[in-house]
Image 1 (spheres, rainbow, N blue to C red):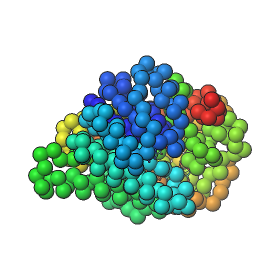
Image 2: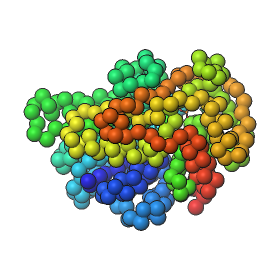
Image 3: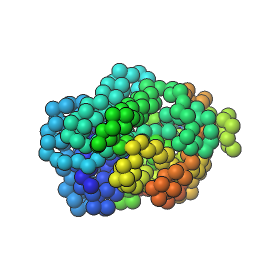
Image 4: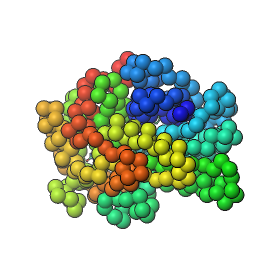
Length: 345
Ligand code: NAD
Ligand code: UD1
């Protein structure tokens, strides 16, 4: 297939490029580099031996998207582009609604004008809010999000669903096919250590914080709460290797090919690990110590969040293969080889 990746220079996009190329898909990337570095694409080219057509453009820029869509015939768009820092979204809500929702509105308008009505969207387990069931199936009702970032995912899911529903109602001969992928907690990196997560400033997510403690950039980990109703009191999440997540996108193309209409899949492992489980797994996998202190709970956090991922297995034949030790090993390899991320270049 000919596939457009918006946000393809980012963490998940760059890993997905490799998996798409290895399955012989043609790819084009649009990214405004607001949270990424073009070097990630150079590294993907190094890994795959394939030149990646790249447009440095903002998806809110209709004219720029017109140029891209006029130059290529896309079968599908995998839409990663978006701002994703939860805390930042609380202080800059307008920027998040404008970028994530405004960007998606322009993108889908240009797509439909060019007859490409197949989209795979990067959603998040955050749409479940405080989940009403554990493990979380796709039938779990969407919940109340605790931040603007979460609401953008929640609303974009609704927008894309409505586009499909409207087409069906008016008997459109080329209706939208929409795959909503709800990611759990992606960590890890490509086994080469050449690409990985490259957070700006002090990381807010657990794994990049741990790797920066391990590499000596940060003193110690702050564990947010040990009084949750979990085996050791610390928060439990469903960590998934980014390469497994990337392969989920390749499998999701099958749903598009089968004219799925609307399809929703959780991408997780189905296993929950606590913060301290991750710390101990990291220490064992890499023979490094991670000093930590227990702090108050972080506002907005839920105690337990992990997926039921059977639906993706039954319908797409996808399941995660890597375990927590692999994730810790690969995250550390990336950090060790690139102590300052892509910025060290
Ligand atoms: P990332 O920041 O590494 O990648 C996003 C990319 O989009 C970046 O390269 C950025 O420069 C680009 N971008 C942002 N706004 C843009 C715009 N207006 N026009 C063009 N490019 C733009 O993030 P990621 O971790 O790779 O996440 C990819 C997607 O998955 C995001 O939509 C994110 O919200 C979603 N997601 C991520 C996680 C996670 O834990 N990483 C979890 C759930 C969902
Ligand atoms: C967060 C976001 C989620 C987003 C995801 C990926 C919130 C409430 N949720 O998920 O919307 O999709 O990131 O960007 O922010 N922890 C520590 N110390 C740290 C960092 C984290 O103890 O320094 C704990 C957290 O309390 C949590 C677990 O580690 O229990 C995972 O946290 P994190 O990596 O931030 O992911 P989520 O909060 O699950």
